[in-house]
Amino acid sequence: MSFRATVLTLYPEMFPGALGLSLAGRALDAGSWSLEPLQIRDFAVDRHRTVDDTPAGGGAGMVMRADILAKAIDHASPAGDARPRLLMSPRGKPLTQERVRELAAGPGVVILCGRFEGVDQRVIDARGLEEVSVGDFILSGGEPAALVLLDAVVRLLPGVMGNEASGDEESFENGLLEHPHYTRPQSFEGLEIPAVLTSGNHRKIAKWRREQAERLTAERRPDLLAKRASTLPVEK
Ligand code: SAH
Image 1 (cartoon, protein in one colour):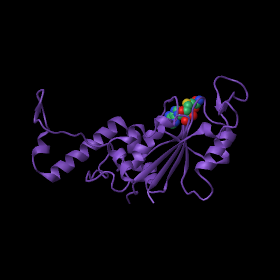
Image 2 (cartoon, rainbow, N blue to C red; image 1 turned 30 degrees about the horizontal axis):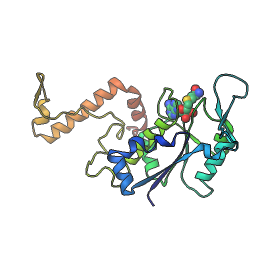
Image 3 (spheres, rainbow, N blue to C red; image 1 turned 135 degrees about the horizontal axis):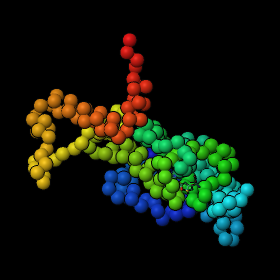
Image 4 (tube, helix red, strand yellow; image 1 turned 30 degrees about the vertical axis):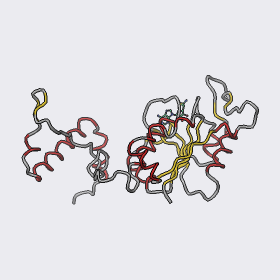
């Protein structure tokens, strides 16, 4: 069984979108994964296909209704479906490469995309939705966040990356940002490729890359270094 993604959204036309092209698109065509966007409005109960209502307690905006969303989720993910149910949400746990890897190793995902002010808390609780954030900023809807999550997951599925043996050296995979890259021409606007990279000395190259990765991480993401230090075995 290949990886199955079901996306509950008010804008099914946004899918596969960018995921229909390039690596993810080829993998979709090849059947390495499947994508089923479902229109939440199809689960509405009135003539106007209403999915939202005014917030209890007052305030601006609209809230997506728990009953409509529960019907959509139960349809997409009936009892026995082992796929995690995710809700894209700025209040969620920030997405990490570690979680992406776990998801890619599983049977798939059911993703609920929020709109308006968000969704009624009761459906989050009653259906055990895992809230996932793609960063500390506010999008107008969960769809771009779902595309980001799926892009990150799909490239890890078996066979999708072809012979790009990336993986281990990539940013975050070893708790560090990746070293800088260079390619021809040798000289660009008077800037040369660092000599070590054209030296042919693979031990020195590996050492240089490692140092660069550590320097970049210390400069830009000291939080990653701190996390890394706390997970390395304590020296006796
Ligand atoms: N009122 C909410 C924001 C709603 S934005 C708040 O202040 O927390 C509308 C929808 O966009 C959300 O329900 C969510 O599905 C999606 N969204 C917005 N920002 C996001 C982010 N950083 N990560 C994941 N989803 C996001």
